[in-house]
Length: 207
Image 1 (cartoon, rainbow, N blue to C red):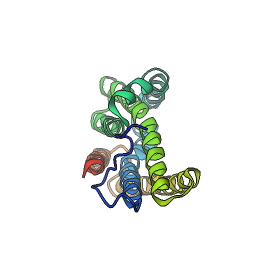
Image 2: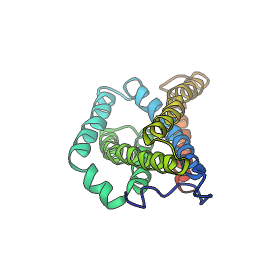
Image 3: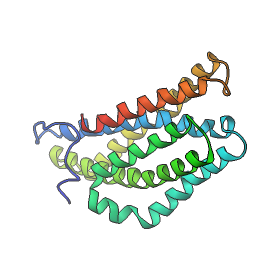
């Protein structure tokens, strides 16, 4: 296994305990929680707040680019970048959609959505490879079976990650309901807050 894949996102801790790999899992999980609090709410609101059919085409562009990237780009790029840098670069791409929503026109939304989709093709395979490596190293350190550690790591990650829909949608509902609805200046406030949150959470990858 590539040594870079097993490098923790956190600083060094005693290698024999496995704590550094578990700590890395929590850093990754909460970082992606912040990223997807912003993205999930943004995606859910696109067809309501973006004029005409642009919102529908925006969402379609995300997944078209994602499918293309997974089929043709993910494997070679992750081999070059390694899982950790793939996650970092992929996460940065998610910010483009929040930024584009500050001025939602065809010339901003479709390119931003396409870039996000290509970023997703780095983020998710990178996340899977990184978590598998961390779980394997944790199992070795604790002298456990790898499949048991993988179950633990997946459970923790998705338990934290799925809070994104709850937190993100509550945040969106509160901001929009207290600032005049989805077609007011509240929209720009919401996306600006999401953009700030997104960058803060991405920085957690290397804090």
